[in-house]
Length: 217
Image 1 (cartoon, one colour):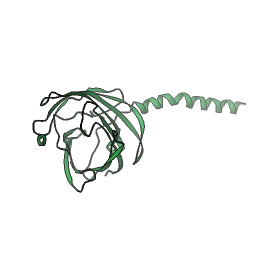
Image 2: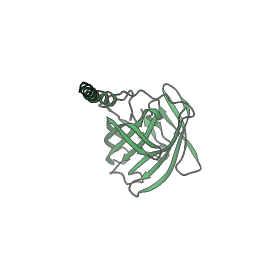
Image 3: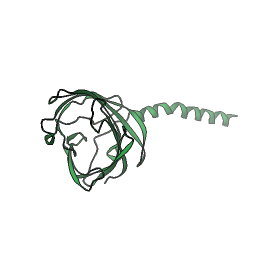
Image 4: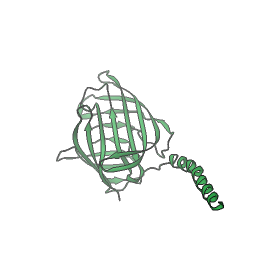
């Protein structure tokens, strides 16, 4: 009987110890990624208005420092390459599709942990589209750790939600946007990103990028 009592006590002790452990895991802080040249990620983009794939995009790091990341980008389903520049926290400065962001998109602010909240405001110009000029006012919130499933597998990810409004200074158009990022520390980038702009009439009203495969050095 004593042996049984000891076993019951041990099991109870383990169960009582589990919630703090879970809380410690949930509260884990994520440092800025140590991105290296040669790291690469391949994504599949899906247009959720049509339910169809828009092809794939590969980003391959050619330069990384304490302040910046440069990637060569293989465009969606095209035999063509362009490039992109980010801060060392993966905030866009110049995007593969011609966007210029001032000061940057501010999407991720490391170190990240659940409960963090911050502003992510920026201006966006697209020189190839003439006078195109948009001001974004956005709020970011680091929600929680959760499991995300993508073609590359299942990952424990830190979910970040960014919501806000914008105004096009060249046309006066206004609207709202919502971006959700599932950031995975061990792959040094996100496994999934979704973007919604219900006010916008163009082709990217609602899309997601999901990781197909990756390689980190």
